[in-house]
Image 1 (cartoon, helix red, strand yellow):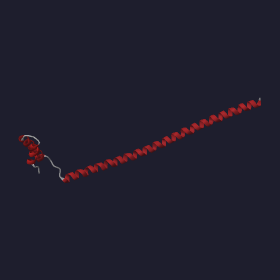
Image 2: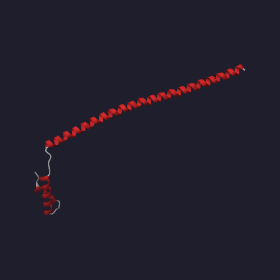
Image 3: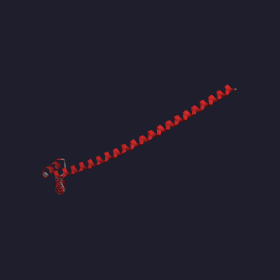
Length: 115
């Protein structure tokens, strides 16, 4: 229950004129009487609804996270395949170049030995 007398006294003690304090007190009383108050049951129901929404959002977030992790894993596999392929190709090229140079040296030596 709103104690209008106490409100008026508090306002006049702070320096307001009695008619100003009475007007403010009346406005506060009207607001209190005409506003919709939430009952404890309504509050609990609202909290329960909010918790359910949060749980739903968390579940959706977990699902999206799992999908993203799976996609990252797939992309990592593709990157590893490309890197391995590139390294093997480079190694093959270097080996072929080495063999070609070796053969050229052997031919040159053979030509020098034969002459």
